[in-house]
Length: 372
Ligand SMILES: *Cc1c(COP(=O)(O)O)cnc(C)c1O
Image (cartoon, rainbow, N blue to C red; front, side):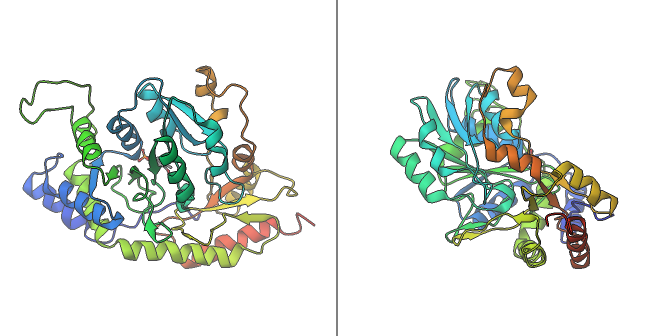
């Protein structure tokens, strides 16, 4: 069986973890947290990085840091993980959806303006599968309407848009370090920004809204979103060799692209001229004339020993949000289609080249003679 994800932990992870145990620094009050934050900020090219316990809460913290108020609207694509609208809803905000582009599977910038209202506070582009969103027009619209841009870069560590790192372009950005992400801490996340005020607010809300002068006097409702020194130890070991890790990912992407780009019946995620993607996962989309959908295809592939994962299910079709009366009668045809016709093949950091060749051959075999 070729697994969809296997992490690679063969740097200094073990050594730094041992140091945590030996020194007793196991909570968030340990030296690796700051070191990891500094190295990560340097890598992305931003002034501040605030480490947290996962990528989901990083989004909620980011929204707290820009003072999202009840009733404030945030525009985001329907094709993304539930973490994005969750953070908005937990702060009392309103998620407002747009569709994605049929080729890049990233938010369709042309649909943004129609969804802007006086209550719009932010736009949340998600660099899906490590493919950068078209940030220039997003930033232009944001400036024109006085909106924040919060990049969800959970899948895009090291990806570049016109030579700039994803996560350094918007007013703030979030990352995840879950075990299947490009840099991992097991569970973990980060908020990054160049803005001193946003960074200060994020640190404040991360840590129970303790105050520097009177620690136990609270003026706001905060969170405990702290990361442990143990997690940061793993993160530091990962960020130290990030160039090597990114090389692995880019080579994986190239190999799959070369092997699969001309296979009848299947389409790859489009890379624009200005994009340097990092191929977090390698997605495949079935053409319309293939007579089965992605869930059937996933079973066929599994029978041949290839584990896959489906694409995100559209937010507007989620039972939990329907129950809440959200997104009633809304339709985003591209998000609906790619959810049903797309899956991603094994893409983990620990994936071997030979396994990629095997996966590509099995993909071709399952599609042979299907479309003509
Ligand atoms: C993984 C992911 C998250 C959430 O991160 P967790 O660390 O799993 O909470 C958020 N957004 C996107 C786009 C992701 O892929």
